[in-house]
Length: 179
Image (cartoon, rainbow, N blue to C red; front, side, top):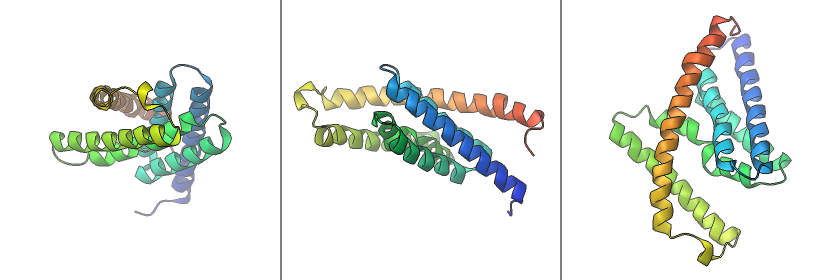
């Protein structure tokens, strides 16, 4: 499928706008003392919006641009790192995983991705941030609790994306904003 110049411009503009909004939320997450995970998760909704509006390539672009700008512009790098290590790429990957047939296989893949990311984050905290092992909770509790919270996050994220598709994106198209 060949895209017209106007369609390419629309997708690029939307991707740039979504990237900017994601970076703003990453900045907010870096300066607020509480709610950092929730705000970083909300920033990932802009990656999902890019996937809905312009495809997986646009979602990947929003992830890459937001991650790079977050690391360059935000002094406290904890929020951009959370975005890079899981929340930023998950919406595009979720879109790919949910095309696989079979709900059980989809969940197995999603949990595999989450647990790999959690393992990377765990070792990052231990090795790079030199967090004392005594202050860390037991790994089994982290993984069990993390998987339960991830399942809730995935369910809520799906609902948020459906809301965007059926309320925001649909409304935008009705208004004639889409060319």
